[in-house]
Image 1 (tube, one colour):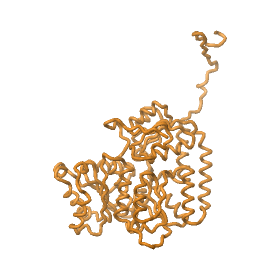
Image 2: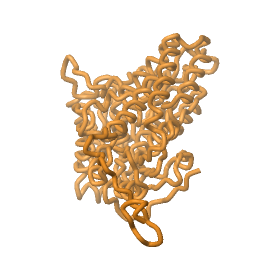
Image 3: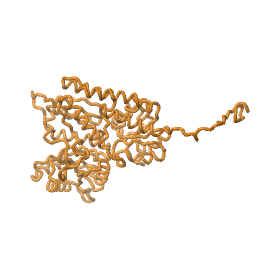
Image 4: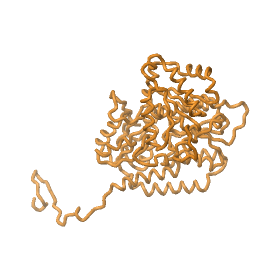
Length: 463
């Protein structure tokens, strides 16, 4: 069991975490025809927008209520109302997801009450679903904001299950924010291979998977259709990924009665086997032959790559669920996690991370720990590249944001194929650091230094 070391610093030297409002905005972007709206200043939104655009290399329809000094003191209801009406008039979204920021949360307004009043008196907003999630910057990080947004969507849009209603061959999938669009698409295909119908909330595989639409769309293009959210209560089962998705899964279960299973990670042989077993039971059929072959390929890749993991000292910095996922994957292959840095302490999984201790801190702590432990590989997002350069240690980019490499949204790390890809990627980085010996590295007459009784000699005979 790892020892959790809380942060004792009053500031972050090199921040590891991104804010909760950004996590909520990304969740809202997984809804078809959506516009995320950050209730706060323009600076809060512009920073989140820059990170999102640099990571996904896509146009992100992130909007703001543009709170100024006067609105911050007197209240932001008028700004919120004006923003909603303007978005409805200009962008015509099907869905508007509101996420609060620290600026307005500090004042302590009744956001949900104000929103109900606005929706009641402004008929212009009819026909657009509006959801609010409380996500102050000073509490939590990406995972927390994502989970709160998904919980708010479930509370507002999912219909309770009718008594006596039959369950369809439908499976609800609640992916965590650490799943890429490629991960979500792979999970969809996995569920469909058992002749089950997946309903994914939120679904970034359709909205942020990096495709070119055939027409200009001012809102999110793709994602979970609104008409698919309401009947989530008719599913056979709900699958949630990551500890931060426990609250949304429980909210859906309590509202609809649909049983839920939470997977801490879907990277690795054992977690994948558990998922396949569950789907096989739900579908009442064995795993497809193609899936069995993928499993065999993963086992072979583990045999091929374990030489490059065994004994390697690795340092990882990420949000809690991603930290758990990556550390379990590399430690299971024989690597040693010598430094584990978490962005927050908001996860019971932290004490299960295979490391002596988990530090809740920033990338400055990450660099210090990696240097002291003699790490041979760093794993974190793109903001860790300076630490890697100073330490002279290779960096594998993981998490959010990744802005100095292309294709982050297409990286696959879940399931048999995703686990295989991840192991090969790490093994290749380690293997690339091994330099072949050259003739100049060897001396034709090596000198042997022998020390006896305090006297140093060039050869043993000389002593």
